[in-house]
Image 1 (cartoon, rainbow, N blue to C red):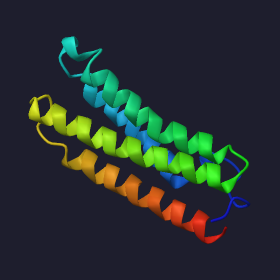
Image 2: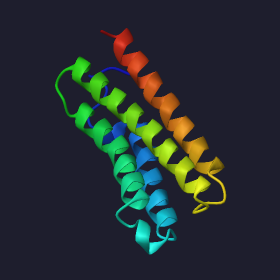
Image 3: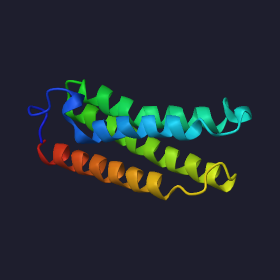
Image 4: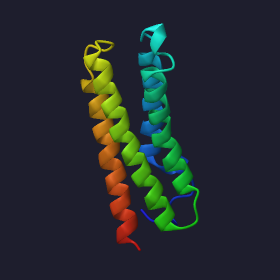
Length: 122
């Protein structure tokens, strides 16, 4: 995949999957204690939104290096969400985060693959 084959962020499977993941996390965090609305719930949601938002912003840039930088920011957000979900699990707000970790691993691998492809074509 090259910058020429990406018309918009909507063409990227990793963006689509990360968008679905945000919706899942919003639904999951609805059951968290009300006192966490401005705590862990807000942190999880903002970090998850950051994944797909940075993919979109990077794809909208005109230079490959900028796109790659935004993909690295998305990777950081993946790690952030994973950490926050682990905290939520340790606080017993979630029974398991296995499914979410599976999706995050998939997103991480897709982001790394996209970075590799973009670097390879430069």
